Amino acid sequence: MKINVIRKTPSIVWIWLVTLIFFKCTFRPHDEYISSIKPPEPIMVSFIVNDPGFKDPYYLLQPTRLHFRLKELDHKIISSEIKLDGSLINSTIYKNSIDFILNSESMEIGEHRIDMVLHVDTESGSLANVAGAEFYVIKQSFKVIIDPTPPEFDSYRGGFENGYLTYRWNGPDSQSNFIYEILRHGLRDTLIYDPQANHFIDYGYVGGAQSNMIRAKGFDFKEVIGSDEVYQIPADFKLTKDAEGMVRLVWSNSVINTEKVQMSIMEYSLFDSPKPYPYSSSGEILIGKPGFMQELHVIISLYRTGYLSQKASISVDLKPTPNLKPFIAYAMLKERNKLLITSNETMYRYDLEGFVLEDSLSLNDQGLNKNLSLTVSPDESKVFISDDYGHLISFNPIDFNVTHHKIEPTIEKFTDQNSLLTTVKLGNVTDNGLLAMKFWKGDHYAMVLDTNGGEVLWHSPPSNHYAPTVSNDGEYIAVDLGVPYANYEGWILKLKDGHYHPMGKIDGGDHAFLPGGKEVMSITRQSELTHYTDGDYIRVYNLMSPPQDTNSTFNRLRDFSIPYKSGLNKMDYDPITNLIGFTYSDNIDLFDLNTMQFEQSFSGPLLQYSNGHLLNKAGFIKTAP
Picture 1 (cartoon, helix red, strand yellow):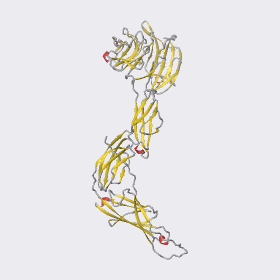
Picture 2 (cartoon, one colour; picture 1 turned 135 degrees about the horizontal axis):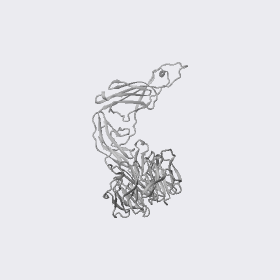
Picture 3 (cartoon, helix red, strand yellow; picture 1 turned 60 degrees about the vertical axis):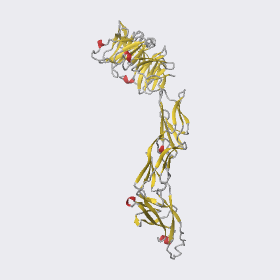
Picture 4 (cartoon, helix red, strand yellow; picture 1 turned 60 degrees about the horizontal axis):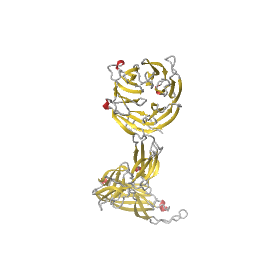
């Protein structure tokens, strides 16, 4: 890796020693008014110059304002005379300092001379001093050189030395008409005034990206010595997770020198603010325990004391590893302790003990295409899969080699003959093969299909958006009729003489026939109601006591409300555990249908619950605690 290293040099104060000369006039005062004051002795003072690289001779690189300030003497400068090559130039007095401009653009190349004469108040308090006839005279001269000859450099190189980013080069041994400029993107330029310097140490660099340039600057030239980009990871950082799910930040092999290096870490989902920690060549920090499927993004910030502007930030991620194939639909086989999932192309079967993949089946080879829908019979003997184009097959979920049964629904007789059958979604299926489904064919429809002979036992009128639910004995169906967010209602229909007939109403929403076959449940979303409610709610009705009037409502046995929470994605009833899962954008809440009480909540995006497991369609599953 090719890099440039830059070091910032402290400013050098150039001290100029001068001899001061004392002048006075003599007279005899009246003793009653003027006390005798001994005239001051000649003294030695020095100047502080604003250019850290100032020396005699002085190489003028560009138009420059020179500022000279008396160091030991805080007396007022009365007057000044500054000459360039014998010609008077303008100067400005500021109490005990003076400045003037040397304009290199109007001066010839070569050697010049500056002569300075300053008159400084003695502040002795004598009558001569009061009369302005007593002052110090300071005289000094120095050479100014303008030399446009650029220097030559070779052997430019950069790298880490003792953990500090360092640049080295070979330059001229005797040439002095330039200074070094250290340019780094986003930082103030650093100047090195010693032309004999041959290296620069960037003490502030502790990692990350930085663009650098080193060049020699003189009169009418800027000679680039070297420039490039440097990017260095300070150490080998990584996140580890132990068997208990605890995550730690671990690092080793620090490239940078650890002296005076400050470190802080931030993980926005676990910390309220950055946490400071000591930095060493290797170490370990406990981050915390993330939730199911939670991705961690840890930001590590480093800087050396005194160099905050060169803070480096490094990020380390820990992404959860899927233990399943990504899927669009799933079904649990409780009795066999298996899980079926399907993508748009393939069916997979997993053993829930260790989530081991057992078998797979190409659904494309079976004539299925996309947007697959999946359901399994309660006795786990058949699985049904449909696609978006009305293709429907069934097969043995345990033996994928068994001949698959293709079913052709006879739904054209009550739909638009010229419309394509699309958007097929399956509901539940009974042990005797009655399958609930919804679809689009010129309009929205729902129906119950006898998969044994392909006969349609019931279908909805047009503009029905909901799939029905069939009781396991096939005697009842629960269905919503109407348009969502408008005027839909829940109905119970009973099979009689080969057809389903209305029995009475229940609340609209998601429906399920509860174990035992005597109760039916509705789960209603607030957003789908036509009237105001404080939250979603669950209601259970007595299926054995229908209303006398079929336009009336079944008797309600029990109900409870779910406080409203935004971000509700879906609701699922798990008949295996008799729990209802409310899936939100970042968690799932479980409610026990037996006690009508809140059971438990789990954190994680778009989780689903079934058979004691939490699932996410990105390919994640875990046993719920």
